[in-house]
Amino acid sequence: MTDPAQPVVCLKGVHFAYDSQTVLEDADFDIHAGESVCMVGPNGGGKSTLIKLMLGLIKPDQGEVLLFGDSPLRSRNRVGYVPQQVAFDPLFPISALEVCLMGSMRGSSLGWAGKTERTKASAMLESMELGNLAEAPFSSLSGGQRQAVLVARALLAQPDLLLLDEPTAHVDVASAARLMDRIHALGEDMTVLMVSHDLSFVARTVPKVVCVNRCVHVHPTRALSSDVLNKLYGHELRMVQHDHEHLDSHGGHCHG
Amino acid sequence: MSTWIVMEGIVMVEFFQALGDPDMVFLRYALMLCLVASVPLGAVGTLVVVRRISYLAAAIAHSALGGIGVAIYLREVMAWYWLTPMLGALLSAMLSAALVGWVSLRAREREEAAIGAIWVSGMAIGLLCLYKTNSYVDPMGYLFGDILLIQATDLQLAGVVGLVITATLLIAYRPIMAVCFDAEFAAIRGVRSGWVYFLLLQMTALSVVLLVSLVGIVLVIALLTLPPAITSMRARSLWQMVLGSIILTASFLVAGLLLSFVWNVPTGPIVILLAVFFYMTSLLRKRFRSKG
Image (cartoon, rainbow over all chains, first blue to last red; front, top):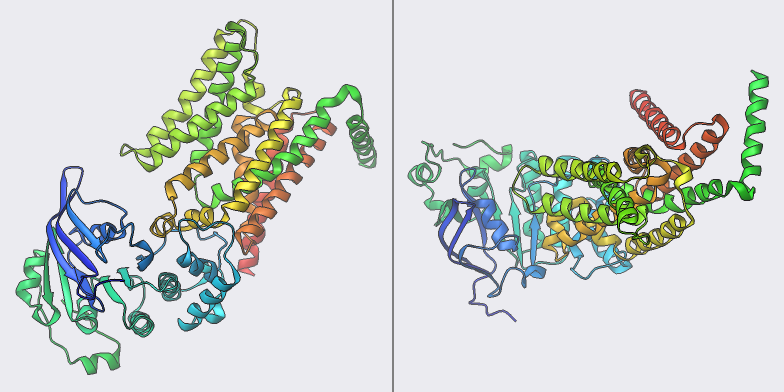
């Protein structure tokens, strides 16, 4: 049982370098249960490296990464992950259902998925409004539908923490909004950490932002100002305030 | 025209009679090898194609010549008669598979160059050893296949390898499919992606060696990749693709063997030309269908 006061994600003085190139320096932050947080920053700033550290795919050179008070590898069954996209052979004959079923795999999974697992995966696809496409080849789906299947795959094991690496990078604005609505509807108690480049999306979606550019700073979303963004991206950016109700009804704007 | 058809028919009858001829035992061996080797070759070929590692499989196949050359040399110089050329090919292909796997997963140097080095060094070692062997050994038989090279032990080896590969696929189907589709996600779910990838490369090594004597080191890679490439155009699941590839591989091998007997030409090139012909025809059919 997890202590409710214990952070779901805890980074303490994390330092990471690829060869001699430092990517992260003294990264410290906590994310608590039920929080929805976005991670923003320039390309090469260390966002994907942070996600990989949390997934246990790489280890920090210094410092500590803890999920639920334990190592990422030991916590992996409580974590769901949605990549930006899957680089796969378009002729790979695999259905949406089979992709979704990968979400319930464990290290010891052998043979084929059982009937119960298949029923659960079908129900998950149904909840993502993809029930009629369960047997469709994954490669025949649109970008938004594929991303929804990857979300379903991540949610199938009912994770306590969901990590999303630019889940809406290759989908249109309306599909992105629908996708996020479904994620929130399916995992109300889930902790969500998402990488995004879309600052308007961040402003509308989460109350807290992790700014990553070699160093890590955490801000409430409302505190994001032109100054903060200029420092983060090292380039002059202009914040434009929009009426959010107006925005939602017209499908979104580009911000800069 | 009709005389030609009659002649071909007579030769085909002779082929089936030859299968029962005690002096033509190599033909029976060849036919049995075609049928037995189709299972591992079709199954592993499917995984090689969907995982897009045909280049690695080619490097593994070509490096088998190193093992063949070393085995022949050691048999003559050191009297290691237990080390058959096929066993040498198997060991060197498995070693190359391990090296290729390590390079593609871990090495930070240019992957293509390192894999190319493994590819050509295997061939170079093999050719040097064959050159240093006093009794003349023609490398062409190993490079492009020669059904006279097939021994009863090859059949036994093919049977064992076929069983091992089929059992591995049945037991580890889910992790293997997950790693072929999305290795990173499989690793996140706790699958040892690196090990599964090594296993796939080792199965590739075992499969290509099976057909070295029949179609040769150079041509075997086409037989590993073309049947799955054809079936992938219509298959709706990985298992359909595996079964289709096994059937097509067996058909190409048996038809190639028969035609090579009828026309009195080497088997390997005929098998490969058949596979290429069907692949091109399938591509054209697909193109016309999508336009229609």
